[in-house]
Length: 366
Image (cartoon, rainbow, N blue to C red; front, side, top):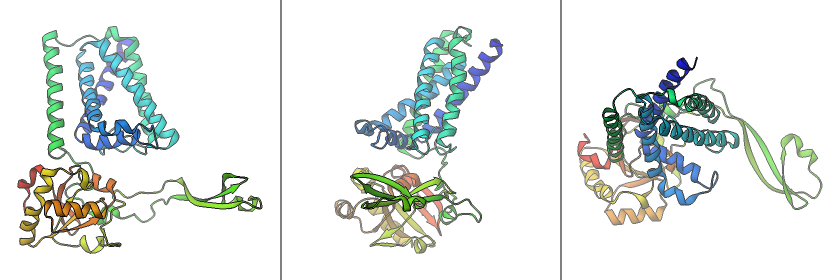
């Protein structure tokens, strides 16, 4: 039996690690956002690690791919299997924590290519742990497929290719865009909720201070609130998540009004997307005004999209001589539109026609 289970486990684990790693390596910035969620205050409260999220993301995704290759070719089996076991134990803990405490809704195991619920991610990791334990207890059966010199070349080549791919997508665009704002998608369609789609089940919870202690009461328990209790707050508790459209929390706000309904019907709309102006790439920001003038001359409506505060917007406009207006949108949504800060997106009546990194402005076709 073990002569069948070991090779089967070797292939399954190796391929899954390579596929999962490559999908995340296609968009390491997106994976770094997920790591930052884990490092944030609501989860593990390790803010010191947040600035290193991207570096850690690169290390983990390249490690995933290379370990998958090493397992398939049988390279240094003891080190490989031990490393895989430690990784899957860490991943299993993280996905269980996410699912049990409902803190990170999507672990990002397969990036935006395949969305898994926390419990689905945890189940996937338990299955992988089972196969890796088979390999761990029978690691002597994992034999190399090639000579040492060929094995070394294959491992080093995979490492070099992963490094190059990571460098490329970080300085340009993901090779494959799995996000809802990819070229060809229409934003208005992405925001629609289909008829008959399940709705969220929400329960109102009332918080009262009873004998100096905050206690929660549902609507059915209001009659049980003791006399003298003081109302503190009211919140909505989601009992069951309903249908969430691929594109949500998308706004184009300015001066307290949302202009998305009129801007998304523009036949030629060029958007500069910079979710955080205080952290935007300086060289990229210097290119925007020149492109703004060029696009306006060709009849484009040009706007900026940011989650920055008004004083940050004013500073950026002054520092870089920007003459276009900025509209507000949630930072998470802007990060989903494009990872570069800034980036350029062209819309035609709400349909994404082009997207480029600020390093690739010369490739933009107006």
